[in-house]
Length: 291
Image (cartoon, rainbow, N blue to C red):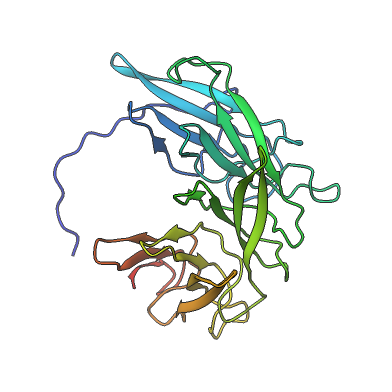
């Protein structure tokens, strides 16, 4: 039975117009220490792959309302297109994110980017305007991966970036990647490549998270040991192993009450249990699960 909740006040703080402020904010928001909100707009409906520009925006509390300021309008070319995940605040205080498309690193196509946005130098980040976008990496759609999806980026304590792509990798069905600072730039490497209908899953739509021991955890939308031809998805773990990483299957969804097709990410509680969601299964409505 649904439990009654305390009375809440609901307010719409911005209605997107499809103009300079963007449209279709598919991902969540990130908040800084000053209470400012940051987010992205995809540009076209979030479930399509049609190339469109999209934006990164900032919402700042002003008196009794909020003011939205676009920080970057993607052009759909080398700078990227269609940010489908949140931006995150990096160790240096600037913004990092991905685009599903754009980048022009796909042999004439567009396989997405990892980007950085920073405010003008020597000016407080509370001052709007003049933010600079730098593309840190353009995916080729090959062994390096292609199409960062819904997953947020995550940093380790050394300042390396980790994320996932829904395509590319050795087998073409997605990858977990790492980006390390290198000689003033960034070097990308693939930690693990997923196979079509592989037992560990395929197409990791969401990002990965760390535990306190440095292991990574994530979900795949397809694959696993399911009766459906495409698989029902999995929860996996990646552990450092020598000079590489080893994958461990934690759960393969069966659509037998446990759900199927996890699209969202995972989160830990204080006891080390994992929580997440599946988009489908169990009568079609999806599930909330604990591992």
